[in-house]
Length: 152
Image 1 (cartoon, rainbow, N blue to C red):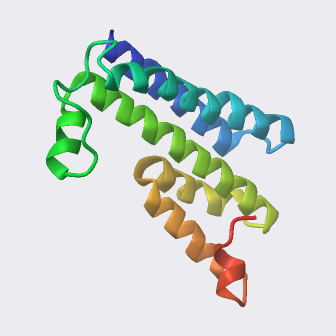
Image 2 (cartoon, rainbow, N blue to C red):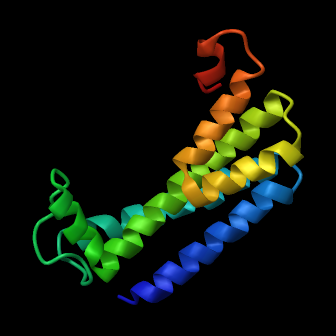
Image 3 (cartoon, helix red, strand yellow):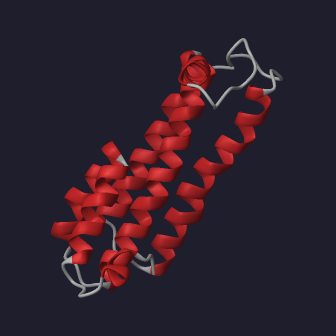
């Protein structure tokens, strides 16, 4: 498999989806397109590659069996070209999913796009940090912690 090509295509695709999320009108058709055509397609790409990679049906995976229970096992999985690529696609899919949720939720709670864009940037670059920043920001609009952190 050409892991460099898969990495480049999925990475560039995700960046386009993030640009659309940041600057396009937040119409339902755009958000649904980002959700299914963006995060959904990245997740499908991951799903279509991860099982054959982990079972050795396609090359580029680690030489041993998958071990998610130890640091050394995870390092071995990610040390191969296929493992690093599929790990990156995993990040791209989940971070975009979280970014879409943040954007929809921030719109619902009246946060200006100027405030949203830096949070979306942090979500793209540092996933959980962006989500943490948004949850802290959302907390400023609510009196109860549960109202601030429960996704709606």
